Amino acid sequence: MKSFKKIALAMVAAMTTATIVATPASAAVMTVAVDLNGTANTTASAIATPALLPVPADNKINATDALKFVATVDTGTAVSVTATNATIVSALHTSAAPVTASSGSSSLTIATGTGTTATFYVYTKTTAIGSVVINNGGTTLTYYVQGTAGKINNLTVSAPANGAAGTKQDILVTATDVFGNKVSGKSLTATVFAATATLDSSTASTGSTLADFGVAKFTATLPTTGSRALIMFAPTTSTDANSADVVGLTARTLAPFAEITVRDLVSELAAEKTAKEAAQKALADALAKATADATAAKTAADADKAAAVKAEQDKAAAAAKVAADALAAKDAEIAKLKADTTAALAALKKSFNALAAKWNKANPKAKIALVK
Image (cartoon, rainbow, N blue to C red):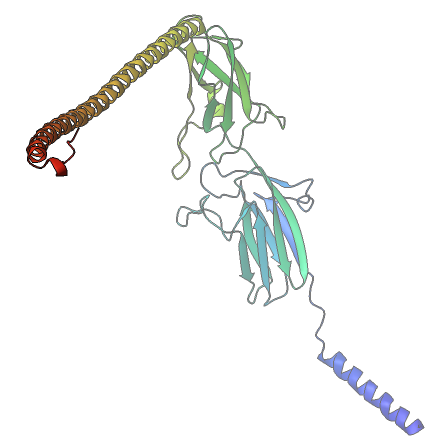
């Protein structure tokens, strides 16, 4: 038993030694340095304090709007990166090698080769918070970024299509940058053309709350006469908006119009009343005509029916007459036949009695009775 235990202990010791020999030195834990245009960022690892990045409104991914990441890892390993609401590029823009707002991807893998660092950049076109997840050798680090809206590039107007004369109407104007992000806290000015409306205020600022972020509200009183209200909107301060279109990005719309049709309800009501009366008259006329047509049709039908009955009666009368005539002829024929028969019998009786009288005279003992 003791010998068996010694052998077992020797085997365990040998296996332990072999394992220790085969295990390499512990891998270095990945570290990441983050900076924006040379200024280190130490807060982006918390979602409450994301790195704030200007959106690339010039359509160039430069050091000023791309967060730089330098991951230090073991030689020969690879760094994998995945971004949400953000885009990864491996280099910044140069005139020789342009990097634009359509460059990059949401994932990237960088092999360090014989080096120990992997460098990449992250930019964003949205003001929504984005995440950057970096992985190497079982170590995962997450950072957060958030875009800051650029200058106003587009104004869009939401206004009622029409309104009653003299009433107040709300008009909403939304300000967005070249990527469609809403721009808050900017003054807009409204200009009314040809006195077609009166504004409560000719200026309003885009809101910054959840309910009105990037939206300015104007209130216009429509004229009591006229057919429409025409109002133009534009940034109050020209430097709050892009001064020129950027090649490759959305063109500017900085002077949109609101056109509201002015409704004269009194005239519309009168027109509706006239139209209603005309419709009622047309309906009454149609009913009268339908009634007359029905009466005429009934009269015609009655006449046709009477004619048909008379025709049947005439036909029956003619048939009856034919039958009566036939019967009268038959009666006349029978009467004649009867008269002829009576005459013939009388003559026969007379002749018989004459012969019988002669017989009786000649044969007094064998007389024949006369016919009465």
